[in-house]
Image 1 (cartoon, each protein chain N blue to C red):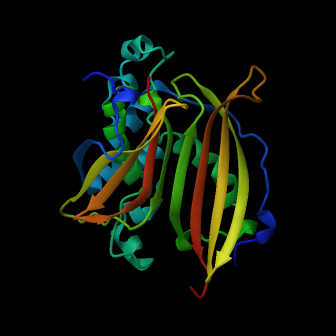
Image 2 (image 1 turned 45 degrees about the horizontal axis):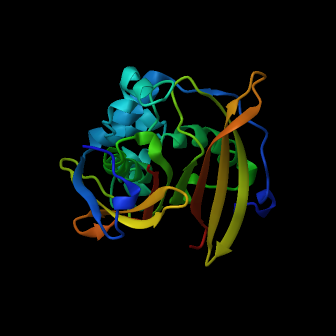
Length: 154
Length: 141
């Protein structure tokens, strides 16, 4: 099934909160080789003015991909994951993600562009700190991602 | 190392270079840490069945391992306010064996008004770029 063009422009409701754990940030930092102590040592992070250990710049992908799953795993969207290549990724941090954050994400399907049998699927995750009611509050990060989906003939 | 000062930087100045060695264990570790369990990153049979030369690294791992060069140069991981890349070529990771990425950063642009420097990163495997337009915007004092 080809990529369903009707999803272009779609905006999803905010996700359930993602709780950013201190050990998760340490684990992710170790996996990408981010050895700066602000990722690992609470005292160093606080000394640098952060409330807790700081996420590496690409950690937001962990939060974003959970939101993106709402779209990608929707069979009606027509995204065959065996035909998908990751084309690009961009993180814009309005402030660093830190341990203790409760993050809610609003997923947008920004554009679906087809050319030569390949559909470029561009999504945007707006990640917010949850307010007291669990709704989107302070903007934290914007994650833009493009997948290239090969058609049946490509 | 003291933090770089925006006014002292020049476009074209190199910020450093480092090598990152990837093996299958590293891919499995990243899969677990990131939650990206796509089998093309750990299962040779699956990877070849979908037409790849073999297991390849997560694009997000190649992007992720390039960031520490910038973080350490800046002296503050939270100073990286924007970070983007395009995934140009897959990074096959043999077993047994390793794939070594070479990461190099240069000052690409300076914006004194915004108080930021753009670092342009080159991420290459055996001299061939695997990422394109890899840019980190860093807030400096």
